[in-house]
Length: 402
Image 1: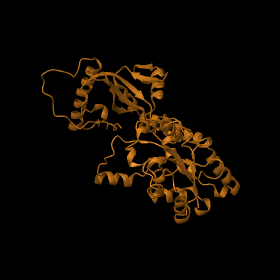
Image 2: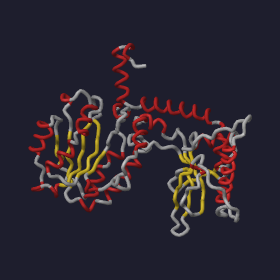
Image 3: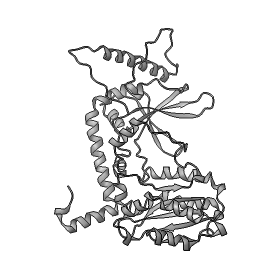
């Protein structure tokens, strides 16, 4: 995210500000040369030592040496698995990575785990009891299941969205080729006091391993009919929507190797709690946009995107400002073979951001208001939120929060 630029004082000239302005002008000239296709600004003139960049847009720490093709304005995406606009794409990625590992599966079957509502005070408590104690992983190990993948689903007809787990297992790894349901019942129901389980005879119905993987990942590709439970949307703790065994490898991150957290990262983590999914979803497509440079590799011809800056509003709002004459820029609408539209910036991106910076307070208020409206819309369409509102109304206004 681009940092705000401090305005220089009229009464006092700061030499540091002059140095930053000079450096910004030099980098702006280099970017304009790239846009014109002439490469970096040449000349044998010795360059001054680089100053700290004011934003990623002005940063020259870029190892991509290919020519700049175009600059696009992209919408803000929340990347939440509960978001109607982002969940399909993210679920599709997981599905494709599972399909790439389909050769490891032999006899897929589906095992469903439920919870006993009388044993827990709420769906949240049931979910935490299962996940914090790693009960699914412990059950798979006790049953001798080596290859598995589970997806979390929420009961829809009654209640507040009680969780249950659909697990795709490989019977080929289990001794005797069948799950010991008696042992599983003793652990899940009696020893751990969680609930019931059911083995669905789907190893016969599946036409292939690919069919089984498509079946289990459908829960990641669709939105629940009544929406996600509000305890999921408003939770400030991470909700795991799926998980796989180690034999499957990483399904989300590119690498399974995790770096040791730095001290400053831990401090930031303590200061900034996780944002609820509902807050992230309310800003999707209406929040701050992003600026990307599309570059074409001279050798392979591969097109790569490189993040160079952030917008104080959505790309659509930028286009409306340009159309009304409040901002001067050249924007072109590009359409791909799938009919999806992209806003391409044909003018100087630095000039655009400088103009938008003058309107940042007004645009910030607009983004907040749009997010509030979308939040109300999301809750208005969610049946779990409607049930909560009806229950509060029945109790009485004195119990209504706020």
